[in-house]
Figure 1 (cartoon, rainbow, N blue to C red):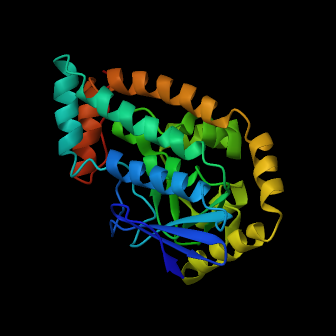
Figure 2 (spheres, rainbow, N blue to C red):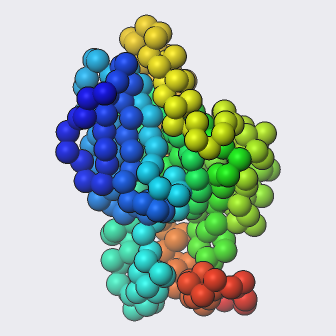
Length: 271
């Protein structure tokens, strides 16, 4: 296995025509603009390497990705206060984040996500960048934004319904419930369900199977079946960002942030 490049908080290795990209912010692998930019840079570089034919995206630690890095809620509280005073810092930062996210959907080579633990909020959005997902019973998938008094992001309002259907996506969005690995597999949110210690190996096995096909044909087919996807994600993130901005100013968002930080049930008042 050959190590490739220097990417912040990532390990990138190539073996048998498959690149494995491992996020290294354990235990929860919270992301920010810098991490998503690093993944997008790695994707772009790997697209230019003919010796790489498929990618595996995984993570070191307990979670695959537990979402955006909000600290213990302090950053959201700061964003909430800033938004109420007319400051646009949140919109600018999230806008940059979503620009990098859209770059992930523009990559040319198939991606298999090895989801060995929780994929929460924006972390679920990151898992849906992949063409396929391999997971385990211990994993949890959640679009928990409504439990924060917030709005989904990372293009999830397009990618999640497109994958599992409107009704199941609505259920996840409206309740914020955590969907365990077995149920995620039954819903089609994950393609393979394996023991936790086999998730990465099985994802690499699937990627090698893809890499065994004619690479020009695979890329051509992928471009056809995913035609317009990045543009649809871009349109979704534009809408999502506007909704996030005004919802961040509400009392419910403040309560959701506090309740999450204090590990209690929120008491939303609809204002």
